[in-house]
Image 1 (cartoon, protein in one colour):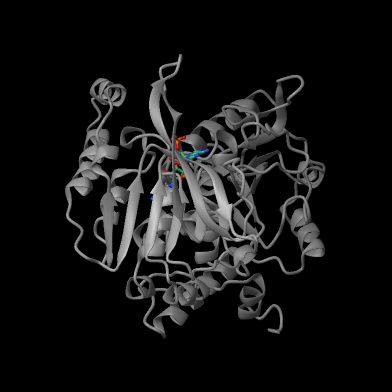
Image 2 (tube, rainbow, N blue to C red):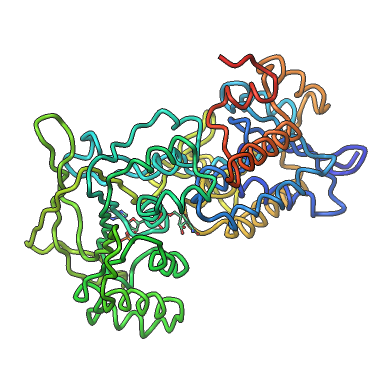
Length: 469
Ligand code: NAP
């Protein structure tokens, strides 16, 4: 009997529930005459990955994308197993007994290090931890960020760095209008941070942040943006790169940054400094092991053999007195049990989404990746759509070649029974929709868009699945 028909549907497991996972499901449902049944497995009771736990709370509109995910989840051939962890409650061997194919869409769950002395001092954190904490990620609820100092540094000039700087610079009145975690709202209400330094190692023409984000920092209620005129003037190499690129977005970004350089500060109570051409060489501490400052080296830009423009240290140093440091130099994928991993790049080795055996370099039948675990932590939410199209096209092509798992128990009820035996507290998408509605009504009760549950226990208690402690 052909696979992928009503009588004999293609059975696919998806690991992860962020944008990459949902766009892959959407593609599988959009491929008539293929009939696919999809089960999504998510470690947390709440789906949507970085849309819920990464997108900044003051970017509410971006989060509306979850409505599209809810629509995908309404498909009768879709099931959600939340609070179920791959590697703990289900293994690759289990999946191969129950599905024809699996897609890993687990993202990039950790951060990259800067590799400078003092990085481990108290008060030095990964930006990704701060992001997860202010977004009420259950794993980060207990994190402590000492906001008693007046100055903080964020290393890196990507969109995550700018999110972190913005959240540190927002007033409580701005934050209360968002769905920021209640614990973060309270901590930031009492924050003493008045100055944040965003540090770019290269120049404005190489900055990773995007224009809407750069514009937005100039519109905050009580923070001035301070840019040094000399640091946003283009050097000849960058000027040549910008001229050759003929890219309106890039030209506009430089104009906005130079515009900040020309601005007179309005005397707002907070100051966000955007610096370029500086790299940290060490974090400085006092005797108690706390960060008290950062030592920077000034860089110049040089062309590499491949034509990219790189930072090269000059011998000129400066020190900034700061009590809090966030490194925001990129996310990194984490290896998955029984799945090949490229430790250097922090991704699963793959060819158009087909996972490759590191030895033979040949595809591992039945196993696929999409999103950041496939391509690395780049692009915006929508970038995951074409990425999912590519992976699903590979899956369909392989099906036609007969390359897939031959599950011994393809009956949908069999895996459900197994999962529930191993994790009786698994939650469904309907459970999530109840939690979602509760969060919104709890928010309404106190004039906020949403009050997020910040622990797995709180979520399960709200569903009546455990007794609150
Ligand atoms: P990113 O865009 O890759 O930026 C990383 C930054 O870290 C770059 O400025 C990079 O500089 C710098 N960096 C790397 N290594 C460094 C080092 N050793 N010392 C100093 N600086 C270093 O990464 P991200 O900000 O984590 O964002 C990840 C992805 O999510 C991006 O695609 C981003 O656009 C997306 N995102 C989007 C939004 C949004 O749409 N609003 C919000 C958040 C995240 P170099 O360029 O010199 O390497």
